[in-house]
Picture 1: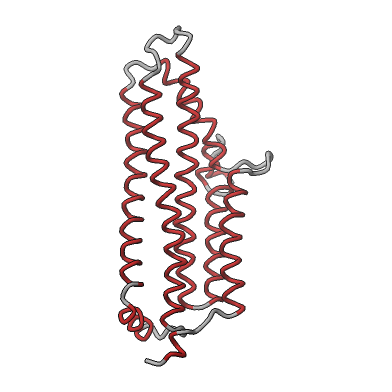
Picture 2: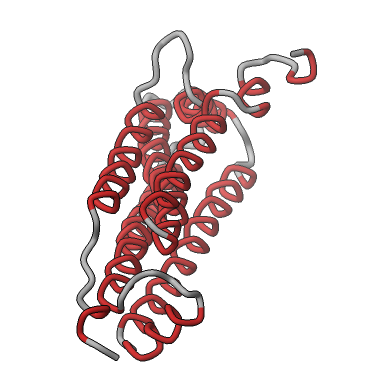
Length: 234
């Protein structure tokens, strides 16, 4: 093992590809959360339904269904957070064993030295770590939402009923936003894996990820259903 392959540096194409990745991550997040009024995203459309849910929650008796829904949302965030922890642990173990990393590079015939591969794995771990933090925060916020829902009076005529339901809706919306950001970070962590095959591959996986996210938010059949349209009549 020589020093030259161990100290290989990113090329101009690598820098451009990584820059595109971060720009795409920030850009898609902004577009999804701040879409044009003429074409709302699924994320923004669901905001109204979450508020409507909490308005109906005030009138529903018993409220077991609502508690079950929030609990399922918390379980979903806990699952993704746990998966991220496993991925972070695996990536850290790989970086901590240079010989295994070098052997992996040799087995896959990747054109990069150990230090470069460590950098590529760290990029993936960055996005996985960002996703983990978002999922943990979403899990906590859904817990806050449950507490606020429990504080809503059983009597719909109570003057505190609807204001507290509105508070619960606001926390629920914030939790969902954090969860969606975590999902997007997972998507871009998968895109970052393309860097293992080179800068051009990273660009291609980034563009593919942009397409997947934007299609899901702006051109999916589920969006048509949410908007009250029949997706089968396109």
